[in-house]
Length: 89
Image (tube, rainbow, N blue to C red; front, top):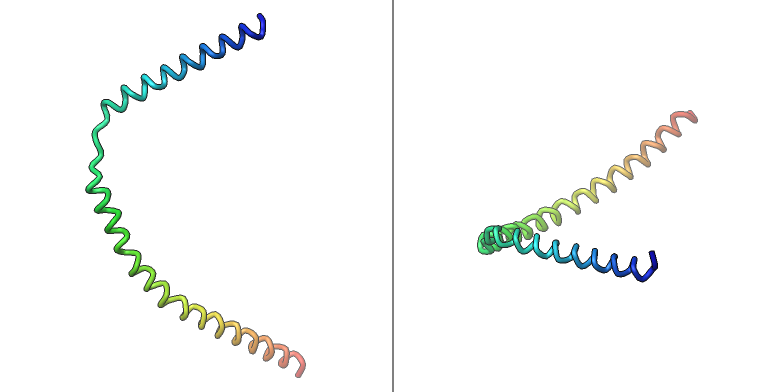
């Protein structure tokens, strides 16, 4: 077969594929129920109302965690110094 015949056949196959896809999508979308956007927007608004409380909680916990990390770092350094002194003496 010539290259031009192969291209023509490929174009026909692509056109048929596109047509069958459009037909399938249109038949499926006609049978789907409609979406109740009011309930979805109410749900999203409820979730968005929770975020300030979560942010406040995180902002309250993070400084405490930083202080605990610094304290454990300092205690670890002192423990290392004490262990080295015990080995020496």
